[in-house]
Image 1: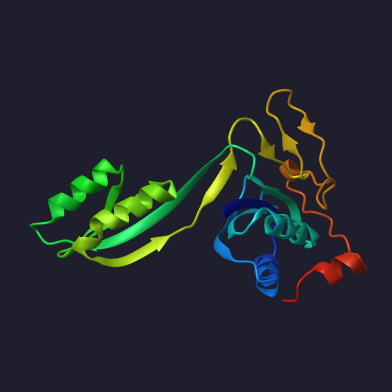
Image 2: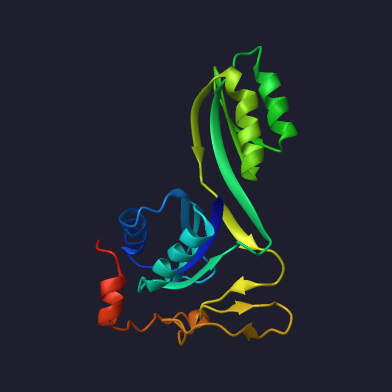
Length: 210
């Protein structure tokens, strides 16, 4: 079964390598992994899709939380969420078939980004099933190149992952109780850099090499 996990991590070199090494060392299967900036310059956000049963999912969460540079981990197993994937696809397009491809892209709410003598480049975003369906329809025209970002996800409603590793319900303005974070005392809005703490021996041993 596919599960979606989101992790807030410190925005510093080596974090992605630590996470990837952890998955590789323990034989966890990654379906997709996306990392990018957040609203806070001190943090990056990872969205990881794993193929696993519930027991393995719990192990993945625990191992991720042990990595020193990981601030917060959350899975969407029992939480409503929205998810999107972005795709660029370059298709063979003759003068005869160009209008057909453009019409298909329009039906899927896609955008033609580039037109060549014998090609079209289409941008499409949405749920994975939608992108897969578009690929199946345009495959007969000839796919020259395809790139996808992988899934990004966010919980529905007012719940949000905060700098301090807590979740706000978006109603009272106060965060729900949550575990302490390495960045809990950082004033992210003030532009101050986090005070680096020395990891404990237990944390060092739990962090995968690399």
